[in-house]
Image (cartoon, rainbow, N blue to C red; front, side):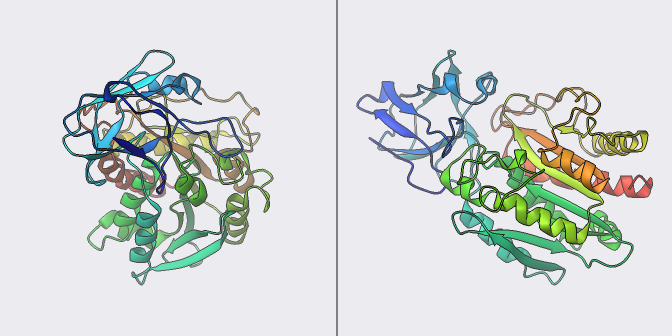
Length: 376
């Protein structure tokens, strides 16, 4: 048997692999940090064997609550991912699986590879409505890719959508793939209506370096990009620096930051209620979007989510809080689960790439509803 992780988004260290029933592994921390949770590795040569893969440092992971009722994902072809039996005893996460083939991949959530990202960008820019721009380079020298959809004509609302500030939250880019497909679908009436009123700026992957390195939350310098918005730095958080610079040029009327949450098994919206400039109008905008999203998709709910910040106590280093305050606009964080959507469970796949992508158009429909209600 062998275990490998020297590939895009790979993350695991092998302690012992002599016994298939007692494979010992540890998850590597993000560079320059002590935080970890994302894993992705391949097991070779174990077909037909009852395997116990013990991630022995899971009890020290960044979000231990994320292991409760969690099931790892597995794939033989790296296209179709399914859930496998997983246990957590408070210190060790154990994946129990009998592989049918001699190579199987395991991951925290279905990976979204750098190659798929490049293919996505290339396919989108073939559309005449799409303008591609590299905003700058990441610390590892990768391009930070921006797609503008529609023309920035006078009177149009400027809508920004970004994903994967935290690279291990791959469901965010699966969602973005679904969003782009809907916006560029000639037969989609919602897309036609939106593009007649809005211009979209989309960053499908805010953290290419962390994605390729197999990080959970940080870029190549060990910076949490979603804690760098108030004072981004070319030295430590160039990704946020370049996006903010572009936002200053375009302005922002609507902002959605797409993430995944380790602990809560629901789709939910986190607003910017605690910013200093919060108002009844901002509350009406937020409530209107959430109500429209509930109507648009049974995958969304409003009962469960994060605690609301006290007035004036919002952390303005967080992207959606900073954007709401700085640009005086509707600005939100969309969170999706790593586990399953407890409101609409599917035990075979849990929350999955396909479900994340299919959920995206409902968010566009909610945005259109807000425009129709003149909330933006």
